[in-house]
Length: 406
Ligand code: CS2
Ligand code: MG
Image (cartoon, rainbow, N blue to C red; front, side):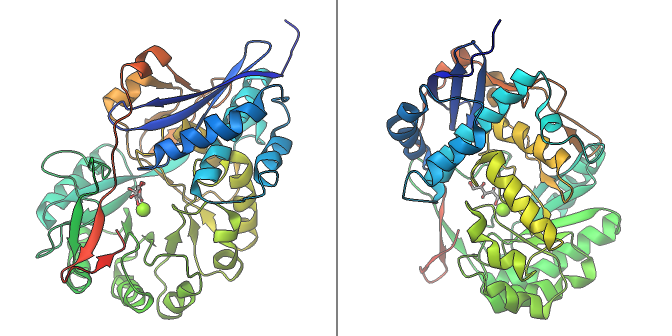
């Protein structure tokens, strides 16, 4: 069949198999299709409307082969640049076009991106517990599964709701409220508890295991500096999101006090969000994702820029990034020189009924697989069985009722 890469259809699919996902499916005149993820946790329908109302009409008739030009068209061409909704929509288009181009070339996407730089993608898992003992059991389970890097989060004594710990026996999934659930938080109790927690993990598992921890934006710069310092002896792989990063200069203060490696960026949507952090070498890992930071095209730019300064990637991979996002991220992870680590939070069984994927996990590593494209497909009939369900992330208050960062 003669190749005809004109876009004839672009469809937005919103589905909720265990949680909400927004998927864009682009089809070309010669019958090929590609898919991209545009999920923005708790704000899914904003991206779906942006795509349906403002992007899809401009896509019809465009040449799907012109990926960079299309990226520029929706970024520069929109006049209103950046922001999570716009950049997730651009990402959905971009990832779908890379998927299409790789399918057209008959190769897995990582080959089109330059080929692999390593044998596989090292991933980190989530261990969580309602107490230190509970957490140690969760770490042990993940060690048994072969993980070499584990994020540890545990309930803090006297604090009703620590970040990263599941409710009851359910796996951790924060977007669970029809309206935002309100959580209560105490930074002093958390700061006193953290060294005890890390000490218990190192005492039981030794120092070979890479340990990570997510502060989830809750500290001030000086509190974060103190935490980094108090955890130095436990040799963390990284301390994530110690402070909110609207203030990039905050990281200079943290850096001045601690050698604990710093990671940030899951809420970033543009290279400008991390320009100073990278150029001034204030962080060690940039955690932006293909879905929230403008797709493969923009993430490659961020990774190349970071490489100049010895900053490595640590792609966000929570369950609110769909399997499409995971597939695309794994191809990028494999093909860039300054890959650091990839987050791996396995999707629910229901999610995997809707999204099939060529990627796989074994012994602490993932591989995107050899299927042409990014290797992830959506079953539209299955997707239709799970209509959108409004779900919010929680909000967080201090013990005196002050609204805090969740
Ligand atoms: C987290 C996420 O994976 C992470 O590191 O910070 O669980 C985050 O809370 C969610 O992706 C929010 O949508
Ligand atoms: Mg995080």
